[in-house]
Image (cartoon, rainbow, N blue to C red; front, top):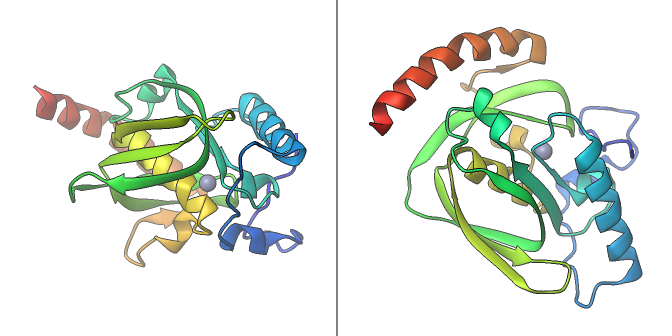
Length: 196
Ligand SMILES: [Zn+2]
């Protein structure tokens, strides 16, 4: 496993990689690109509770992201309604579908011991390429849309903390854990009612 580049860790030498737009990937992929893909895939598969990663987080300024939404996410995200298998996207972009936004908690492997509530588009269209240069496109809603926006923001040099409004609830993980747990049950009930 590679160490994460962490924005609030002063010992991290290459922190500026997190706030710099990453480089486009050219096809066919170079040896280096294949290596980065191998590393990020390994990291993603071996990290616990990891929904997504972007190449700058492990030290590579390249437009590569990986994510999935397994069924278990529904145990702590009310809007994780669509299951998405492991997906690696090269040069990904997204566009909102409509203006609706949802407020929910986010954390990040590149922000140590912190979390906060961020507004994200509820529905998006996204596209990118697989390792052979074939286009992958889709629509995502709820948690999946949030996750994809979070990862694409990474390769644009934007972390969730840059989107945190001063009035948004935020804090150390231990502080916010209790709030999140207490709210989850209530939210779940409201969400279920709204879907009827
Ligand atoms: Zn992140």
